Length: 410
Image 1 (cartoon, rainbow, N blue to C red):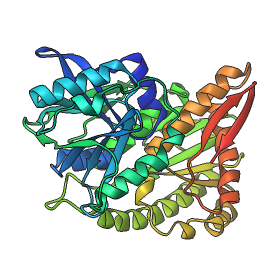
Image 2: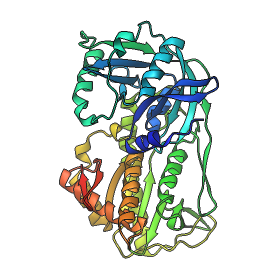
Image 3: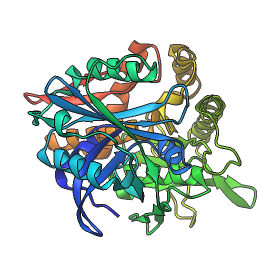
Image 4: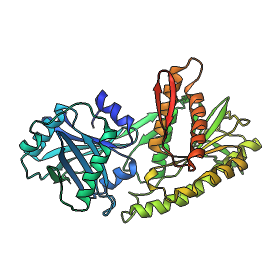
């Protein structure tokens, strides 16, 4: 298990995916350590043994390092960083020397979910690569084009214009799962297990972990409505306060629980049908609430749900990158849903839900009367307006505070 230091934890919570090289205390003292933060789908590809490469390249006087995961052989996913700290240089030198390192995987919430040892096969001396390099702060927006050009040259097997060293990452030990559990205010346990065969339940647990931090008393997993002599689930998660209610319908993708590792194209096709089903389920859930159908917890305690204000309806998916035909998830769908339910439809992945929760907490901290749950509701309304302007539900929004003002950037 690896507990992130404050600086790295802040970085991992600030971006959807990234990786860092560090010198961390391990079984043999300080050792080079690979820290990977990614969405759960990509982590599962790594756990299933797809090829991985580690690349260190010199661009001008800086070192860029890239972790390429071949989740799709012809279109792999690459995570990259720029050396900012001396410890990264030290870790690289040691890794090239000993040709091994532990790899720690972190999910969307920056929670360590698995680790293993890997071996490397660097054949080049790093002395020239690292000669007179600069470390320090980086404006990553200025590096995107440079790194994209580098990755394009590597992917197309073109002549590389900059010095670099490359190694395959070979997992040399069995992946060790790291158990994590959240005890909610309702005394319910939400365990996170990246190896679980119930991948749908795991994504629901991530939704609970995120929203429970906003208002523990008013977040309920698996709310129930009457069905015959028993009950059935209304939706996966419901949040409610006096100004409105939010329903979350989680739709995950099966990666580990298949006989054959699916392609990303297969997952994307599955996700399209899952989104369609989730929208129908959310429509049905809101209809029940507007009719006055009683809602309870699984233990039959009554949940007080605000039913007069407009509802927010969230389809939670694992990865925006898997959404096909985004034009079909546009203004017409938003208007149809609003006309049928009086509510606002949203599609977010787990990383985007984290950003929404973080924004809500920051807005609340800067106010005197607004609670995090109220800020969550208000922020979703503003986000919906931005989706209407963008013409698609598939938007990613960052919030920045400048001189006390709140500004949103798509």
